[in-house]
Amino acid sequence: MANRLNFLVKITFLLLYLFVTAQCGEGKIKDFEISIFPETPFVYPIDQQVDADTTYSKNWFLISFNATNNTSEYLTVAAIFIDVFDVNGNQIVETGFSPTSYNLTTAYIEVIPPGDTATLLKTTQAVDGIPDPSIPNQYTYRLKIRIEGWFGNGTTDPGERFSKVIFATTK
Image (cartoon, rainbow, N blue to C red; front, side, top):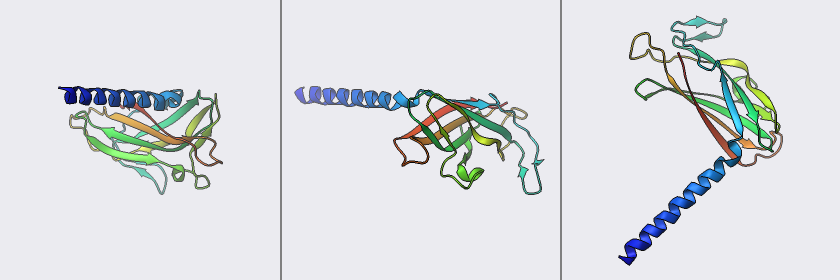
């Protein structure tokens, strides 16, 4: 009985520790706000020739991001990842944007000073090639958007890493 009680006490303290450390990790990053534009991206069910070198494959949408840094530190955004899920919760597309998506001269997407707001990815980006929906003409997909980066100015050594996740849907 004493062994079982010791085991339960250890498990309780371990769970408490994990809960507290998870809350601490969320501390700074909870003051980093991300919004997407448009709020509910529209899925285009056709191929679209953009220019001589670029064609968006059918079932594509455009997306852009605004970020507000309400922390007391600089935030450097290094990458943005988007996972697209169908109505059944199956991941069907995974894509990402890094500095090479539009600018080969930096190792980050954006540096956001404390109290400032910035547009991430200076041009609206497309997510394309999404498989046809399982229900015809129902282009509602779930999006999991993960912003990765670090605390600190992009020109200095990276500080503590962060990961911020938001969710959205298309129509």
